[in-house]
Image 1 (tube, rainbow over the protein chains, first blue to last red):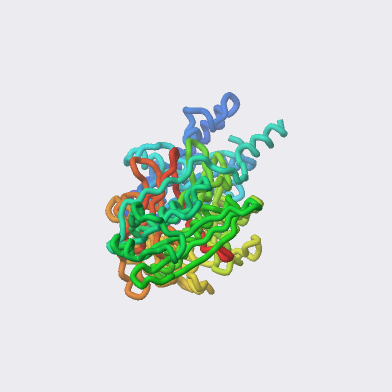
Image 2 (cartoon, chains in turn yellow, red):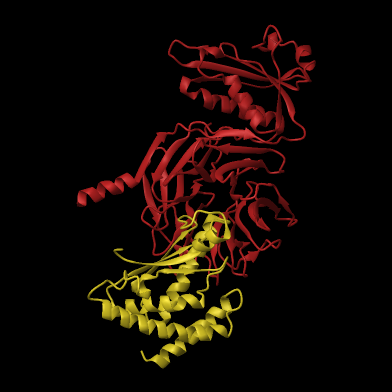
Length: 174
Length: 427
């Protein structure tokens, strides 16, 4: 897949994203996208260079060691700042066709448990869609939701809730 | 190694029916405006048993908030048969109804229990029953007596013989438990180190459907309460959740994400004949069947915020039915099908509310701030729900007019996800 084609798809995806998100995903997201592509490329190189010495998924200096996408309240759109990381994982999955990733969606504790389960699922799906657009096959990704059941932070404040509105990328066998 | 893993898995998920020592305790925090004054005389020979049958009846009636117990001390001799009743004694105490009875142990170890409900004003008998029971059936018999009294004096069916299911979380351990409606006799149905959600009673009261994360993702199981036998009802790719039985018990509405978004599906109770039911651009979840089986109501964010929708059970377009506020979730039909209970967010608080189908009128029933998962008693007079007090999960109940309030808690841990069981036949 050439870069131009990729950009065209990315652009299509982002506009789709903007039309379903709550607010403010307008022109700025185009900028996010190009930024994301650059970082994705850079990190893939990093993975290859250090692959012999250290598992790129665990190397703290590698973007692939970052796994979490955080979301706004009652929102499921992937914010621009997380795109480089998601794109790096997409590249990794494409280069490692035997790798399988789970995207685990989470929600903060407020409100209905079942609705939060669905919201977590939708967040995981948003991350999967970004990866799909970058050419990752569905056979390599399974999305699941933990809803509000597995909070990372136990506090009852916005700082804790923000930690829990999250999707994590976890590789099979981890 | 393989064997170790197997044992570990077995330890993680124990399916059992063990008695639980920490019973639910119930505290009444409000009462109806017009309570019926009832005098319950200690039954003849009831002190031959470990538990006072008249005490259990009195506790049931008191907990409903609809009755006021009249002091019986000082009336001598205490009557146990109609011929022994002197009505002026009870009129002077302003009792409107009088409950008398007795117990006779039999040579075979069983007990004969008899009781009568007397109308003090009309000086006549309203009801009278006798039972031959094993000593272990004493509490159940007391609940039956309370049901008779409740029905005769209020005109509504009593729910003292019903059960409730709920989830207890203690540390990292989750338990699905079932207890009598008065909190006694709690039994663990299923225990796991992973979350358990959304218990739903089959209409015959013999099975529970629930969502378990024991395989690291939400899967719906159906478990028979008597035998403990269970099967995975829905274990498709993605999340499987929000089970709701059809009134005839033959199908369940469930929520799957196997096609991407959370959408409603219909599945036979044996796991066969899966059909997709809703097809919307958003989240569809928390389905509930109308008592006549013709409608379902559910939560959907297809319009931008989570709201409650109604759709014909044969399928078709959903119609939005909640309009107040930006967060209305977890709907359940009232047993008469005329209204539904749900959770409404007001500012930063979440309350139990009821909406009438005919008028669209909404009444907020609670003032506790973090309410979830409302579930109607099968007579429609009370709603049990989960809330939080001092950062602990507790169950609470409120009458459907908002006047009577109860709080149910366990000694340790968080209690949540209550589901009030059905009225059982043959009782």
